[in-house]
Amino acid sequence: MPVSAMNLPDPLVVFALRMESQDLFERAAIPVLYCGVGKVNAAAALTRRLAEYRHAGRRLPRVINFGTVGSAKFPTGTVVACHRFVQRDMDVTGLGFAPGETPYDDLPGQLEFPVTCPDLPAAVCGTGDSFQTAACPVPCDVVDMEAYALAKVCTQENAEFVCIKYVTDGADHAAADDWRENLHRAADEFLAWYHRLTQR
Image 1 (tube, rainbow, N blue to C red):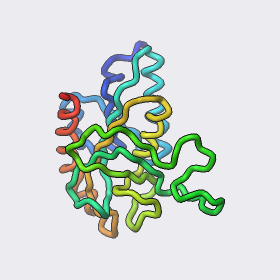
Image 2: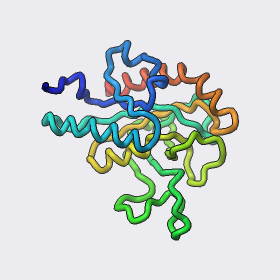
Image 3: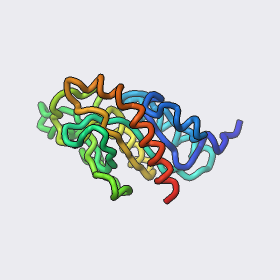
Protein backbone atom coordinates (compact mmCIF):
# COMPACT_ATOMS: atom_id res chain seq x y z
CA MET A 1 0.00 0.00 0.00
CA PRO A 2 1.49 3.40 -0.93
CA VAL A 3 2.33 5.72 1.92
CA SER A 4 0.11 8.81 1.89
CA ALA A 5 1.33 12.38 2.13
CA MET A 6 -0.60 12.60 5.41
CA ASN A 7 1.67 9.89 6.83
CA LEU A 8 4.79 11.60 5.44
CA PRO A 9 4.24 15.29 6.20
CA ASP A 10 6.79 18.06 5.84
CA PRO A 11 7.49 19.32 8.41
CA LEU A 12 7.40 16.24 10.60
CA VAL A 13 6.25 17.10 14.12
CA VAL A 14 7.63 14.90 16.89
CA PHE A 15 6.43 14.72 20.49
CA ALA A 16 7.34 12.15 23.10
CA LEU A 17 3.83 11.84 24.49
CA ARG A 18 0.30 12.71 23.47
CA MET A 19 -0.08 14.34 26.90
CA GLU A 20 2.31 17.04 25.70
CA SER A 21 0.19 17.98 22.69
CA GLN A 22 -3.13 17.72 24.58
CA ASP A 23 -4.73 16.61 21.26
CA LEU A 24 -4.51 20.18 19.93
CA PHE A 25 -2.55 19.07 16.86
CA GLU A 26 -5.02 16.29 16.08
CA ARG A 27 -7.91 18.76 16.30
CA ALA A 28 -6.05 20.98 13.83
CA ALA A 29 -5.45 17.98 11.51
CA ILE A 30 -1.68 18.23 11.95
CA PRO A 31 0.04 14.81 11.80
CA VAL A 32 2.28 13.99 14.75
CA LEU A 33 4.85 11.28 15.39
CA TYR A 34 4.73 10.25 19.04
CA CYS A 35 8.11 8.67 19.65
CA GLY A 36 7.69 7.51 23.24
CA VAL A 37 9.78 8.32 26.29
CA GLY A 38 13.56 8.05 26.39
CA LYS A 39 16.51 8.06 24.02
CA VAL A 40 16.07 4.56 22.61
CA ASN A 41 12.39 5.00 21.80
CA ALA A 42 13.02 8.43 20.28
CA ALA A 43 15.89 7.28 18.06
CA ALA A 44 14.09 4.14 16.92
CA ALA A 45 10.82 5.90 16.09
CA LEU A 46 12.40 8.74 14.12
CA THR A 47 14.79 6.43 12.26
CA ARG A 48 11.87 4.24 11.16
CA ARG A 49 9.84 7.22 10.03
CA LEU A 50 12.67 8.81 8.03
CA ALA A 51 13.29 5.44 6.37
CA GLU A 52 9.68 5.55 5.16
CA TYR A 53 10.36 8.88 3.44
CA ARG A 54 13.38 7.40 1.67
CA HIS A 55 11.45 4.27 0.68
CA ALA A 56 8.70 6.43 -0.81
CA GLY A 57 11.26 8.47 -2.77
CA ARG A 58 10.50 11.59 -0.74
CA ARG A 59 13.05 14.11 0.44
CA LEU A 60 13.55 14.13 4.17
CA PRO A 61 11.34 16.58 6.05
CA ARG A 62 12.24 19.31 8.46
CA VAL A 63 11.86 17.64 11.85
CA ILE A 64 10.25 19.83 14.53
CA ASN A 65 10.46 18.50 18.06
CA PHE A 66 8.10 20.03 20.59
CA GLY A 67 8.33 18.96 24.20
CA THR A 68 8.53 19.84 27.85
CA VAL A 69 11.70 20.45 29.82
CA GLY A 70 12.85 21.20 33.32
CA SER A 71 15.26 24.04 33.99
CA ALA A 72 17.12 25.58 36.88
CA LYS A 73 18.06 28.51 34.60
CA PHE A 74 14.83 29.57 32.86
CA PRO A 75 11.60 30.33 34.73
CA THR A 76 8.61 28.05 34.37
CA GLY A 77 6.53 29.15 31.39
CA THR A 78 9.53 30.10 29.24
CA VAL A 79 9.60 28.84 25.65
CA VAL A 80 13.14 28.13 24.47
CA ALA A 81 14.76 27.13 21.19
CA CYS A 82 17.29 24.37 21.75
CA HIS A 83 20.10 24.29 19.22
CA ARG A 84 22.77 22.46 21.19
CA PHE A 85 22.30 18.99 22.65
CA VAL A 86 24.24 16.83 25.11
CA GLN A 87 23.74 13.51 26.87
CA ARG A 88 23.53 14.36 30.55
CA ASP A 89 23.65 10.69 31.62
CA MET A 90 26.58 9.52 29.47
CA ASP A 91 29.29 8.85 32.04
CA VAL A 92 32.42 6.96 31.06
CA THR A 93 34.70 9.07 33.22
CA GLY A 94 36.15 5.87 34.67
CA LEU A 95 37.90 5.34 31.34
CA GLY A 96 39.07 8.93 31.11
CA PHE A 97 36.28 10.35 28.97
CA ALA A 98 34.61 13.66 29.80
CA PRO A 99 31.07 13.63 31.21
CA GLY A 100 28.64 13.52 28.30
CA GLU A 101 31.22 12.14 25.86
CA THR A 102 30.39 8.89 24.05
CA PRO A 103 33.54 6.77 23.76
CA TYR A 104 34.95 6.33 20.25
CA ASP A 105 31.97 8.07 18.61
CA ASP A 106 32.49 9.92 15.35
CA LEU A 107 30.27 12.78 16.53
CA PRO A 108 31.19 15.33 19.20
CA GLY A 109 29.68 15.16 22.65
CA GLN A 110 27.67 18.31 21.93
CA LEU A 111 25.57 18.40 18.77
CA GLU A 112 24.88 21.86 17.35
CA PHE A 113 22.31 23.10 14.84
CA PRO A 114 21.72 26.52 13.26
CA VAL A 115 19.63 28.97 15.27
CA THR A 116 16.20 29.01 13.62
CA CYS A 117 14.18 31.01 16.17
CA PRO A 118 16.32 34.01 17.14
CA ASP A 119 13.37 35.61 18.93
CA LEU A 120 13.40 32.81 21.53
CA PRO A 121 16.03 32.26 24.22
CA ALA A 122 18.65 29.80 22.98
CA ALA A 123 19.27 26.77 25.17
CA VAL A 124 21.56 23.78 25.55
CA CYS A 125 19.39 20.71 26.09
CA GLY A 126 20.66 17.89 28.28
CA THR A 127 18.96 14.60 27.46
CA GLY A 128 18.97 11.53 29.67
CA ASP A 129 16.92 8.49 30.60
CA SER A 130 15.75 9.91 33.91
CA PHE A 131 13.29 12.52 35.13
CA GLN A 132 15.81 15.04 36.41
CA THR A 133 15.14 16.43 39.89
CA ALA A 134 18.67 17.39 40.96
CA ALA A 135 21.79 19.09 39.62
CA CYS A 136 22.92 17.89 36.20
CA PRO A 137 26.48 16.50 35.86
CA VAL A 138 26.84 17.79 32.28
CA PRO A 139 26.46 21.56 31.75
CA CYS A 140 23.12 22.41 30.13
CA ASP A 141 20.28 24.91 30.38
CA VAL A 142 17.26 22.59 30.18
CA VAL A 143 16.72 18.85 30.65
CA ASP A 144 14.55 16.36 28.78
CA MET A 145 14.55 12.68 27.80
CA GLU A 146 14.50 12.60 23.96
CA ALA A 147 15.95 15.63 22.15
CA TYR A 148 19.60 14.53 21.93
CA ALA A 149 18.54 11.24 20.35
CA LEU A 150 16.35 13.00 17.79
CA ALA A 151 19.13 15.48 17.07
CA LYS A 152 21.63 12.68 16.53
CA VAL A 153 19.36 10.86 14.08
CA CYS A 154 18.86 14.09 12.14
CA THR A 155 22.62 14.70 12.12
CA GLN A 156 23.32 11.22 10.80
CA GLU A 157 20.52 11.39 8.21
CA ASN A 158 21.28 15.00 7.21
CA ALA A 159 17.78 16.17 8.08
CA GLU A 160 16.93 19.67 9.28
CA PHE A 161 16.09 19.75 13.00
CA VAL A 162 14.21 22.38 15.00
CA CYS A 163 13.59 21.95 18.72
CA ILE A 164 11.13 24.09 20.68
CA LYS A 165 10.70 23.37 24.39
CA TYR A 166 8.43 24.69 27.13
CA VAL A 167 9.81 24.91 30.66
CA THR A 168 7.24 23.19 32.87
CA ASP A 169 9.29 22.81 36.04
CA GLY A 170 12.50 23.64 37.83
CA ALA A 171 14.04 20.14 37.56
CA ASP A 172 13.77 19.93 41.34
CA HIS A 173 11.79 18.16 44.07
CA ALA A 174 8.51 19.68 42.81
CA ALA A 175 9.15 18.81 39.16
CA ALA A 176 6.60 16.01 38.78
CA ASP A 177 3.63 18.04 40.05
CA ASP A 178 4.68 21.17 38.17
CA TRP A 179 5.10 19.19 34.93
CA ARG A 180 1.55 17.83 35.04
CA GLU A 181 0.09 21.21 35.97
CA ASN A 182 1.69 23.02 33.03
CA LEU A 183 1.05 20.58 30.18
CA HIS A 184 -1.99 22.43 28.82
CA ARG A 185 -0.11 25.75 28.75
CA ALA A 186 2.76 24.08 26.94
CA ALA A 187 0.45 22.60 24.30
CA ASP A 188 -1.03 26.02 23.51
CA GLU A 189 2.47 27.42 22.96
CA PHE A 190 3.50 24.48 20.78
CA LEU A 191 0.55 24.90 18.44
CA ALA A 192 1.19 28.64 18.17
CA TRP A 193 4.85 28.05 17.38
CA TYR A 194 4.00 25.39 14.81
CA HIS A 195 1.97 27.97 12.90
CA ARG A 196 4.74 30.56 13.18
CA LEU A 197 7.36 28.13 11.92
CA THR A 198 5.28 26.91 8.99
CA GLN A 199 4.27 30.40 7.89
CA ARG A 200 7.86 31.64 7.54
